Image 1 (cartoon, rainbow, N blue to C red):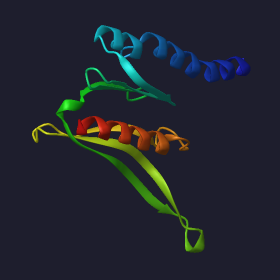
Image 2: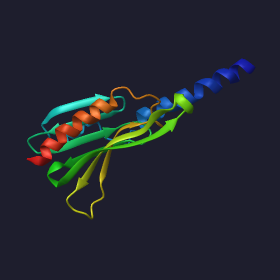
Image 3: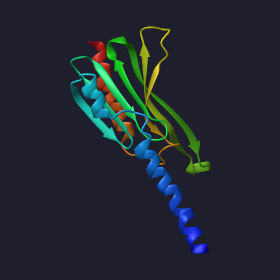
Length: 152
């Protein structure tokens, strides 16, 4: 009898999670969104639970974050004035073993319209993923791509 409750207690959270993932998707599929909005994605990148795509014809950026806080955003780069890297860090350790830890890494988009709040595209959040792998190089690459587009 005890083993039954132990098995149910362990299996129930996994079954609940699986049910929620398949039946309660709150963000549309990336590819479906591209087709519905008639985008011609010329550059795309996927990492961990993120995707970003760029339509060079319409000068639009499509960004998706999956997971606990899903987001799908379509951004018209003609409305963007400035793009920059946004990073939060803290120092860990003490003495000679001090080192910096990145808590958050994103690309910040500032609009020409001052009434429009800046848009933050998350590339890494330590709260959601314990280790940073290629996020810094991906963010730097996309910063360059997007800065080139707002110059034109």
